[in-house]
Amino acid sequence: MRHNDLIFRTMTALIAFILLGFSIYLFLAGHQSPGGGFIGGLMTSAAIVLMYMAYGLKPIEKILPVNFKLLIPTGLLIATLTGIGSFIFGEPFLSQTYGHFHLPIFGDSELATAMLFDLGVYLTVVGVTLTIMLTIASDE
Image (cartoon, rainbow, N blue to C red; front, side, top):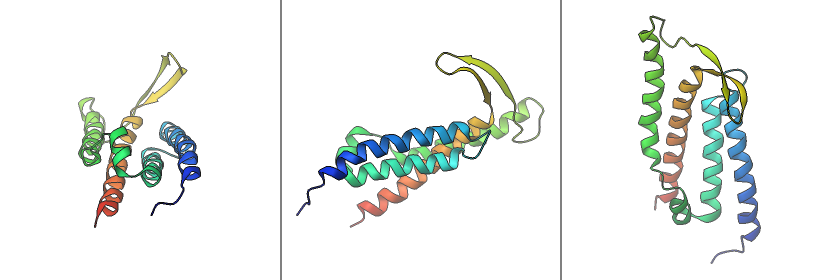
């Protein structure tokens, strides 16, 4: 028997949108202030888990056809290559550099190589968290 979950589903769309926006903010702010790939990945995972809770496994898998298990090695590879990339320029492991760029929407922005490392952490955290949560949820 299914309960009437119209309010839950309606609010999930709004809350998931806010959570995803906040996770992007945390990810982008991470190399300058508190945040980064880890907490951004957890917030993204929370938004996706909320959508799975509200709508179920099948509808969300149609909307998000992502194999979360593949995000884990992809994220680890990006993080590792970011660290190894510093050797190419004769710098110590995980050294970072930055530059100022003019981006079309954001205007004058500072981009750091730490963001690439955070991207690897972000993908790894999303992959691990959602793999664990979906494995537990689909266990019978």
